[in-house]
Image 1: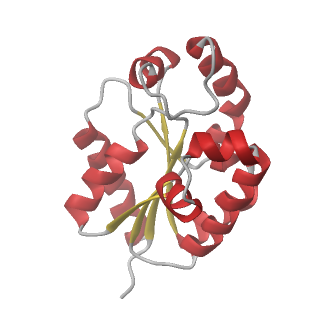
Image 2: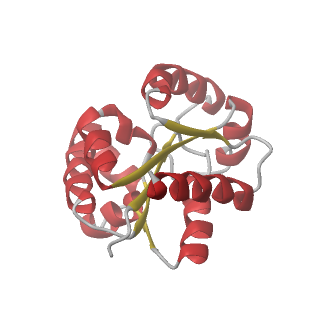
Amino acid sequence: MNKRNIILVGFMGTGKTVTGGVLARRTGMKLVDMDTLIAEHRGKTIPEIFAQDGEPAFRVLERELVKELSACNGLIISTGGGVVLNPDNIADFEKSGLVVCLTASPDVIFQRVEKDTNRPLLSGDKKAQICALLEKRRPLYAAIAHGIHTDGLTDEQTADRILELYALESCG
C-alpha cells in the first residue's frame, strides 16, 4: 500500500524543514525540501536564483517541482513559503496527501530567521518585511484545511499533532 504524502506549507521560519526532519525520522518516510531540490537542480542558491533570474522564474521552477512531487507517494515535503501563491500547487498537493500549514507569530518568525542570510525576500528591515509578506499571504495560509500554530511548541510536539491528523485522515 502506498503511503500518502505529508506536505508542510507555511511562512518562512514556521518550522517546516525542522518538523519535516522529525516526521521523516519517526515515520521512515523520505524528507524532500523543495528549496534545496531547486537549488541543487539549478546549481545556484535560492538568493542567486531570485537575484539573477527573478522571482517569476523561481515560481516556474517551483510549480514544475510541485507537479513532479505530487505524483509521488510516501514523502514528507517541506515547501517554500511562497508555494501558496499559486492555488494549483495546493490543489495538486491535496490530491497526493495531507497538507498542513504551520504558522507562527511575526515575533517568533523574526527570532528564527533574524540571522539567516538565505532569505531573498527579506532585505533591509527584516521585521517589517516579515509583517508585510505575512499579511499579504495570510488569507492563502488560512485557506489550508489543517493548520498548526507553532509558537511555544517543540518540533516533536508539532510532529505529534501532524501525525494525529495523518492518522485521522487515513481512517476516514
